[in-house]
Amino acid sequence: PASRCSLTLLGPRRCGKSSLLRMLPTMLPDAVCVFFDLQEESVSGLTSFCERLAGATAHAARSRGITLPPMAAEPGIEALRDWLEALEEALPPYRLLLCIDEFERLPDLLPGTRQEFLQLMGLFRAIIQHRRNVRLLVSGVAGLDELDLVWADHFINARELRLRFLREEEALDLLMRPIPEFPPEAI
Image (cartoon, rainbow, N blue to C red; front, side, top):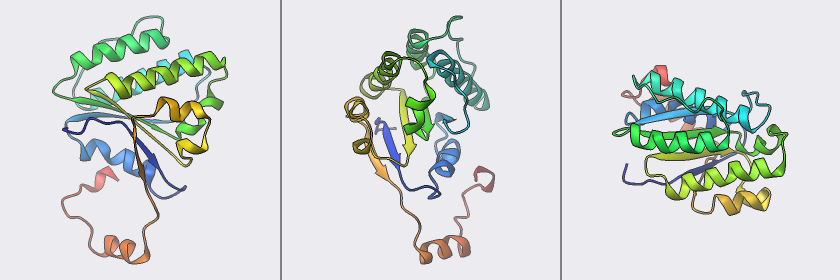
């Protein structure tokens, strides 16, 4: 709670990034953790992305027993921005963590104009810089320095965390002596 930063979680395929994101609701009981996998979500443009993200957020909130105010009837980037602002006021004592998995696929999933992509990146940057109770966590394989310059420009204040594969002895230790207080249903 004291560290209110947005994160970029990077690592090779099959190292456990998605599994870690799926465990966050258990690990962060004071947060509404939204898991939004761009490999699974079918979006047909920016409006569709906004609708699907809002739906995933409402679902995650309901799992915590929280009812969110509805997003505007005609969703789009402005409606999503206004809705996130309203959520910041409605959620305390909870925080909202938007976890976008496979984030580097985003430009390919938004078949619209470059302007729409830049609008979404601007929204991400505003979340990173100005939101206290709404945070962003993106995960993927490619580092920001390996992508289009627009990523590094908009994620300038996000902390980067790198995962690696477990060494053999770490994996064996985890299998032989699992953490007893960690709930198995979170895996």
